Image (cartoon, rainbow, N blue to C red; front, side, top):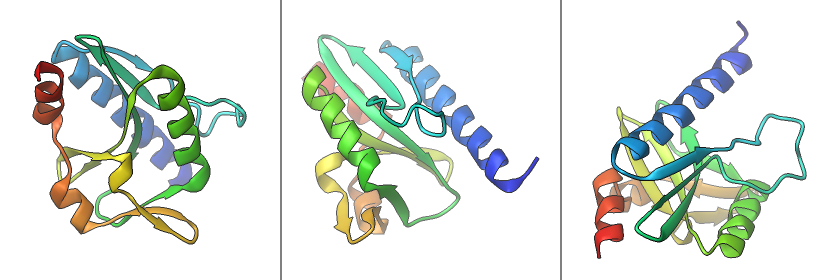
Length: 136
């Protein structure tokens, strides 16, 4: 398996794991990845989760270490989907053996797209925080 294909497979596995973790926390989830497919015009997040009338959408990223970069088009599509659905958008990052949930408004705009660095990860939410948002 080539490096790029291996990375894609690891990404798909993490999307499934993330969706399963949310499901086990009582969220209704749908995994609907479009990246890498030939559906360039599709506007949808990697994972959608709902609980208690609240809707969340996630672009899922995984790397061993940061910083993390997200393309402008991915962020635009996530924003568009969230706006239409009335959802709260996040970038869900798996690194250091845990999940970090970075609200879209916390990511840093750079010339080539967006960046999530150490500062954003330090302020990121975790899965328990997401459950508390629903309860409040």
